[in-house]
Every structure is written in C-alpha cells, then in structure tokens.
Length: 280
Image (cartoon, rainbow, N blue to C red; front, side):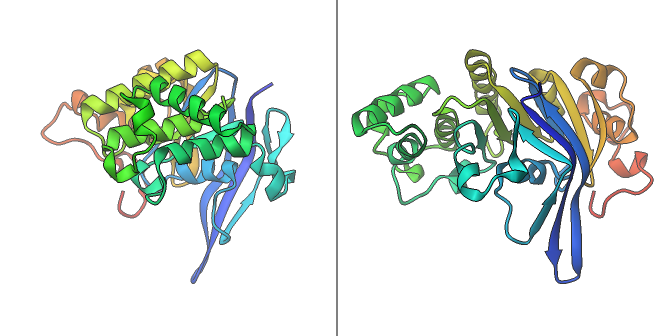
C-alpha cells in the first residue's frame, strides 16, 4: 500500500477576478522508503500540491481530490484537531526559506523542544536530551550550546539543519523537502542533500523532494514527476526520465542544462512548448 496516495488533486484560489486554478487533477503516490522528486519551474504547483497535503494553504484555497490518503488514513476526512496529530509527527515538511520559517523570537532549542512536547509528550529533561541528539545528528557543532541560540545568530546552512532537526524530531514516516537548498552556496547545498539522503535511508522514511534543479533530481530521486502550469506532464523512473523523456516540457528542462548546450544559446521552455506560461 502506498504511504501517500493522491488521486485527482485540484487546488484553486479565490481572487478578485475569480477562481485561479493552481493544481489541475494531479495523481501522485509515494511508497515507504521511496524518494520521489517533483520538478518544474516556479509556479508549476509543486509546493501548493504538498501544502494541500499538509493542510497549510490559506482560507482562500479550495482543495478537492477523489482520494488523499496517508498510511491508509483519509486526510480530507479529518478535522483540524485530528490532522494536527499527524502533521508534524508522521508527515513533516522542510520549508523553502529556513530563516523565514524559524521564529526569530524563540531559541532554536525551544522550537525543537516544542515539537517534542506537543507530539511526543516528553518532559523537559527528555526534550533537551532529544534536541541535543537531533542537532548532533544534523551536524551542528556544540549542540548543547546552540540550543540557546536564536535563528539570526546562525548561518543559513545551520538554520536549514535546524529545520531538518525539527522535521525529523518525531521520526516521521514521510518527509517533504521544499527546495531545501534555496539560497545556500554550492558546498552547503551538497552537504544538505547528502544529509537528507542519509537520514532518509537511516530512518526508512518516504521522501518527497520538491525542486527545479535537475541535478538534485539525478542525485537523489528514485522516481520523478514533472509539473507544468499545475498539470502533471510526465512520471518516470529517474534513469528513464533522463535517457528518454516523453514530454516536450521535460525535454525543455533537460535541454536547458548548461552541460547539454550545443548552440550559442540555451533553449527555453517557449522553444519547445506551444503555450508557454506567461513569464516562463
């Protein structure tokens, strides 16, 4: 049985000019221990799809699906209190901007321990010990001292490691990583990706990697979904996708890689798509 199973997911937003359809009938599944990459340009509906799973979209969003189940539980049938028992514990998400996602008013230790208090019911000593263990696991030096640091006192890479520590604190079955290396330099990007892949293997989690970077896809994924304008364009195993892409859009993404360039300029999406999205 798939860990996450979604059929015909549609997300629309109420706007001043009427409903805007951001996700259009997406089918998606993730098996236990599988790494699924969702790839596409900004605005393709990657993050919106997963925020719908987490129940974190604003009130202006309307989410419908024929099925949205996690580990056999119908997520759409849960009320807010029931969903909170799953989200953050069994399903966790690493958000795109760690500096913006961490609360600047609280220490990183407090923010890690709050997850453990809410979901695991640990006492203060247990929470502190687990927080130190988590910071050690994600590679932050002097973890006991770092518990009293505020986010602004840490680098971008360290804040991302704190976000990962929070996300894995309760040993989730499914981890969603939304552009986890955004705004990090290349060396730190590699370290974060290696850390995520190692933790996924050690904990036996399902992992959904949201990215626009085909290099990240090649290094991390077992299977790939390509999205464009809220629509799933292609789904394939990672080797099959790179060797024989079926969709024009997938070919456009791969052709835009500098290593694949053969002419004087890189191809763009509009070179290969009949109806490119505005601004694409």
